[in-house]
Image: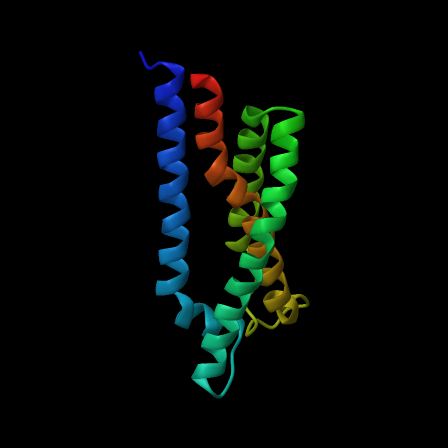
Length: 142
């Protein structure tokens, strides 16, 4: 029904939609996430904590590009793309189960650290996912 090039283009489009959805979601929900995970008496500091977690994740993108670029060159771009998609889904799923800081349980106080860690792990894998469809398509065309 679809040839491999069309599937690769579709995967690239879907990956980019997910990426920009993530950007939009973090931007729209920054105030709420700041209040839930980085509560403070000053709302600006809560918002700054939320954007700080987002910025810490952005630092991981070039590292992920280097790691998955090496994997793509050594093992194959298809494997790197599939691995990055799978490894990107895990931290996204786990963020939904993080306890809030206000909850009175044993691990609620580490929720800001956990959300930063999950965001860094997500961004480590996401950058390679954005570039692999293009390089994979170029490799197929040649």
